[in-house]
Length: 418
Image (tube, rainbow, N blue to C red; front, side):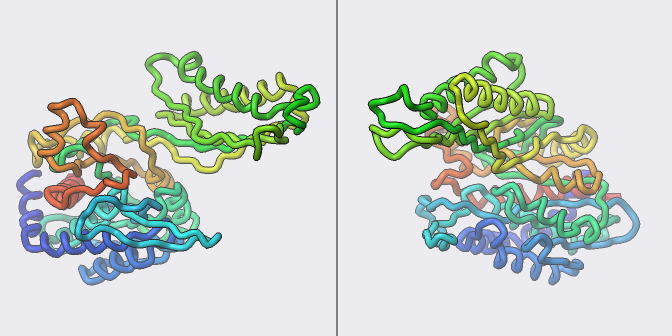
């Protein structure tokens, strides 16, 4: 396997500079979810030039490119394309200065602060190598570029727009994410890898009054405060100590002045879990606590609980993950690892679920190895190594891109190498 991968990846030397230029261009021109027109166009044009059959505009800006190369398995590799509303503070010569205007007229900075530019570049590089080395493999390779992962609606948008009829059913779906590990690192994990994430907006209703006459009010501020405290008991008192979960209240808003008891309060919270059972248990507990506290406080109306975003858990299938891990060990040697579960979330698993296909999703490192080693030695990884979504997050160009291209290619050839 590793010899065949080395044969295909021998072509990487000839396209490395081209890929580095593409990466810097994508980093300099980030686009928010469902607005990735330039990024999608670059991907579609590149894949067409490599001889792929390309369908674009799926779910708005999604792209699927198919390269059929004889009888054999169908392997789909997926990359997300969208950036974040973050102002870049990396100081890089190719840093983003892009801003966009919201519907309400507010100007927002935009940055590839999560590494999706690495993902797009890596998949384009892999697709190019697969096209150039068709004698080394048989089957069908599908490159899928997904919009709006950060909003959690890009995979669903492509599926709703007929993705499963516009691409062949894959035997396996592959995906990767750049993470704050040392560049050159690759990490696989069987089973639960990324958390489910559910963001909720809870509106509790009271009865307003003058601050000097609380007996005339039903105070939603107190109600919200009690809910916030009780929510923190879900993980500590309702889940087993071996069941990981996070409940975070990120926003509480009520009232407009110090001497006015308002009519309502709004709480926004985020729940992270790793499997469907604990996800259901925690979300049910949130609803139970909110309703019970409202009843205990004599709320005049039932609370409104809205799910404002939702990501499924990413649970890697055992057989494909084992196959990829073995291929990585053969090719990358000591750089191949078993990675810990991550509390980040993804909507990628919606795509293989729609096709009824197994999948595996792994991590690659993007941090300067010297910086990482020094921070690890000092015990300051959390302080010194920028993480995804940070304004200072920017993977080093190399060996991050070489690793990203190589990992996708090695994984695909684990099925297509016959």
